Length: 181
Image 1 (tube, helix red, strand yellow):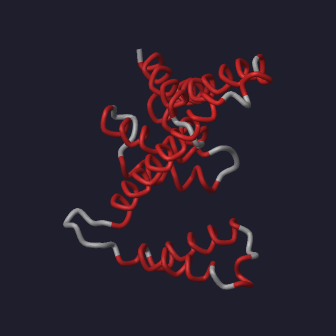
Image 2 (cartoon, rainbow, N blue to C red; image 1 turned 30 degrees about the vertical axis):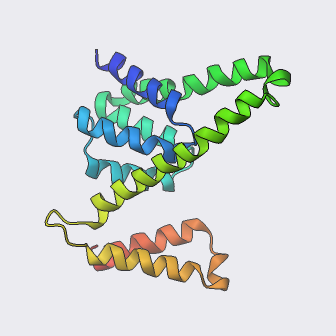
């Protein structure tokens, strides 16, 4: 039953998380409250690991969540379920591509979906911000906030902009260990 549930939940995420990996965050936050596969705190770790490993964010997160729910078969099930809607839609689009791309109705749909996806991503970022940077008492965790502002500020300096993202991740990981953020 767990595999069917994993498949169904991640198939729905794959169907409706238009906009890539970050668009899966609101759905994953909802799952954290529904099932015991992972907590909201685990979700922040999932985002950090998924962003720093090769592959699409949504797929990495589905694999992790499925693994947490049912081991390796669960990870495979969640991953397959997440990508299956996209595969089906791409196959359908490829069949009708010539009529599809310039269709005014399709253009109107995407014009309406883009702002909604942006709002969903912004809501997810706000939710993760609260989990990572706000204590249970409602005050800010100053260490992570200072690190966030410092990295953002350093990334604005022209010579440092050229650093590879892996260097930033490594520096932030070292800072986290040194200062125990």
